[in-house]
Image (cartoon, rainbow, N blue to C red; front, side, top):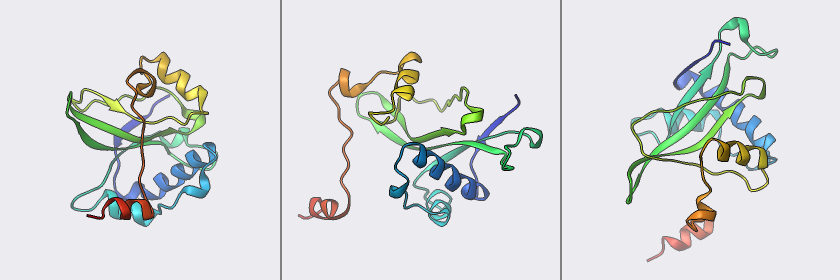
Length: 157
Protein backbone atom coordinates (compact mmCIF):
# COMPACT_ATOMS: atom_id res chain seq x y z
CA UNK A 1 0.00 0.00 0.00
CA UNK A 2 1.24 3.46 -0.86
CA UNK A 3 1.72 5.93 1.97
CA UNK A 4 3.79 8.98 2.66
CA UNK A 5 5.40 10.35 5.78
CA UNK A 6 5.89 14.08 6.07
CA UNK A 7 6.34 16.84 8.60
CA UNK A 8 3.09 17.86 10.26
CA UNK A 9 1.70 21.31 9.56
CA UNK A 10 -0.94 23.54 11.12
CA UNK A 11 -3.70 22.04 8.97
CA UNK A 12 -3.01 18.59 10.46
CA UNK A 13 -3.95 19.57 14.02
CA UNK A 14 -7.58 18.47 13.69
CA UNK A 15 -6.51 14.97 12.62
CA UNK A 16 -3.73 14.82 15.22
CA UNK A 17 -6.30 15.67 17.93
CA UNK A 18 -8.57 12.91 16.57
CA UNK A 19 -5.78 10.34 16.63
CA UNK A 20 -4.62 11.42 20.11
CA UNK A 21 -8.11 10.58 21.34
CA UNK A 22 -8.07 7.23 19.48
CA UNK A 23 -4.77 6.35 21.15
CA UNK A 24 -6.03 7.47 24.57
CA UNK A 25 -9.16 5.37 24.16
CA UNK A 26 -7.03 2.34 23.27
CA UNK A 27 -4.88 2.96 26.36
CA UNK A 28 -8.05 3.36 28.47
CA UNK A 29 -6.96 6.87 29.45
CA UNK A 30 -9.27 9.10 27.39
CA UNK A 31 -10.41 11.04 30.47
CA UNK A 32 -6.84 12.33 30.87
CA UNK A 33 -6.68 14.02 27.46
CA UNK A 34 -6.79 17.77 28.01
CA UNK A 35 -5.04 19.00 24.86
CA UNK A 36 -7.25 20.53 22.18
CA UNK A 37 -6.81 21.23 18.50
CA UNK A 38 -6.13 24.86 19.43
CA UNK A 39 -3.44 23.79 21.93
CA UNK A 40 -1.77 21.72 19.22
CA UNK A 41 -1.87 24.66 16.82
CA UNK A 42 -0.34 27.04 19.38
CA UNK A 43 2.18 24.66 20.91
CA UNK A 44 3.43 22.98 17.76
CA UNK A 45 3.37 25.73 15.18
CA UNK A 46 4.42 28.90 16.98
CA UNK A 47 7.78 30.67 16.70
CA UNK A 48 9.26 28.38 19.39
CA UNK A 49 7.35 25.10 19.15
CA UNK A 50 7.15 22.77 22.14
CA UNK A 51 6.93 19.73 19.86
CA UNK A 52 7.35 18.59 16.27
CA UNK A 53 5.17 16.16 14.43
CA UNK A 54 5.15 13.68 11.60
CA UNK A 55 2.07 12.59 9.67
CA UNK A 56 1.54 9.30 7.87
CA UNK A 57 -0.89 9.71 4.99
CA UNK A 58 -2.44 7.47 2.37
CA UNK A 59 -3.81 8.45 -1.06
CA UNK A 60 -7.54 9.11 -1.41
CA UNK A 61 -8.16 5.65 -2.88
CA UNK A 62 -6.97 4.09 0.42
CA UNK A 63 -8.83 6.39 2.82
CA UNK A 64 -10.62 4.91 5.81
CA UNK A 65 -14.32 4.13 5.79
CA UNK A 66 -14.74 7.38 7.77
CA UNK A 67 -12.91 9.27 5.01
CA UNK A 68 -9.56 9.86 6.70
CA UNK A 69 -6.35 9.97 4.69
CA UNK A 70 -4.18 10.96 7.66
CA UNK A 71 -3.71 7.61 9.32
CA UNK A 72 -0.83 8.06 11.75
CA UNK A 73 1.26 10.56 13.62
CA UNK A 74 4.30 10.89 15.82
CA UNK A 75 4.91 13.76 18.22
CA UNK A 76 8.46 14.31 19.38
CA UNK A 77 10.83 16.84 20.80
CA UNK A 78 14.57 17.13 20.82
CA UNK A 79 16.49 16.49 23.97
CA UNK A 80 20.10 15.98 24.90
CA UNK A 81 21.67 13.06 26.66
CA UNK A 82 24.70 14.01 28.74
CA UNK A 83 26.12 10.58 27.93
CA UNK A 84 25.44 10.16 24.22
CA UNK A 85 24.53 13.59 22.82
CA UNK A 86 21.58 14.45 20.62
CA UNK A 87 18.39 12.56 21.22
CA UNK A 88 14.70 12.61 20.41
CA UNK A 89 11.96 11.85 22.87
CA UNK A 90 8.96 10.42 21.10
CA UNK A 91 5.81 11.30 23.01
CA UNK A 92 3.43 9.37 20.77
CA UNK A 93 3.64 7.06 17.81
CA UNK A 94 0.23 6.05 16.55
CA UNK A 95 -0.97 4.40 13.38
CA UNK A 96 -4.63 3.58 12.93
CA UNK A 97 -5.02 -0.19 13.46
CA UNK A 98 -5.92 -1.00 9.85
CA UNK A 99 -2.73 0.70 8.61
CA UNK A 100 -0.13 -0.45 11.11
CA UNK A 101 3.27 -1.14 9.64
CA UNK A 102 6.82 0.05 9.98
CA UNK A 103 7.66 3.74 10.37
CA UNK A 104 11.25 4.90 10.52
CA UNK A 105 12.66 8.19 11.72
CA UNK A 106 16.12 9.45 10.83
CA UNK A 107 17.35 12.72 12.28
CA UNK A 108 21.01 12.02 13.03
CA UNK A 109 20.26 11.11 16.66
CA UNK A 110 21.86 8.34 18.68
CA UNK A 111 18.84 7.16 20.64
CA UNK A 112 15.05 7.19 20.74
CA UNK A 113 13.39 7.29 24.16
CA UNK A 114 9.70 6.57 24.72
CA UNK A 115 7.34 5.03 27.23
CA UNK A 116 5.03 2.04 27.06
CA UNK A 117 2.26 1.40 29.56
CA UNK A 118 3.06 -1.56 31.79
CA UNK A 119 -0.10 -3.47 30.77
CA UNK A 120 0.51 -2.97 27.03
CA UNK A 121 2.28 -6.29 26.44
CA UNK A 122 1.66 -6.37 22.64
CA UNK A 123 3.49 -3.07 22.19
CA UNK A 124 6.25 -4.02 24.63
CA UNK A 125 6.79 -7.35 22.84
CA UNK A 126 6.88 -5.56 19.48
CA UNK A 127 9.48 -3.00 20.58
CA UNK A 128 11.62 -5.68 22.25
CA UNK A 129 11.47 -7.79 19.07
CA UNK A 130 12.77 -4.80 17.12
CA UNK A 131 15.85 -4.49 19.35
CA UNK A 132 14.59 -1.90 21.85
CA UNK A 133 15.34 -2.52 25.50
CA UNK A 134 13.61 -1.60 28.73
CA UNK A 135 15.89 0.86 30.52
CA UNK A 136 13.77 0.55 33.65
CA UNK A 137 14.91 -3.05 33.92
CA UNK A 138 18.43 -2.80 32.46
CA UNK A 139 19.62 0.58 33.74
CA UNK A 140 17.32 1.23 36.69
CA UNK A 141 15.76 4.41 35.28
CA UNK A 142 12.19 5.29 36.09
CA UNK A 143 10.11 7.76 34.12
CA UNK A 144 9.03 10.44 36.62
CA UNK A 145 6.43 13.19 36.34
CA UNK A 146 5.79 16.25 38.46
CA UNK A 147 2.68 18.33 37.76
CA UNK A 148 0.12 20.66 39.29
CA UNK A 149 0.65 21.53 42.96
CA UNK A 150 3.66 19.22 43.17
CA UNK A 151 5.36 21.18 40.35
CA UNK A 152 4.56 24.46 42.09
CA UNK A 153 6.02 23.04 45.32
CA UNK A 154 9.16 21.83 43.51
CA UNK A 155 9.64 25.30 42.01
CA UNK A 156 9.70 26.95 45.46
CA UNK A 157 13.11 28.29 46.50
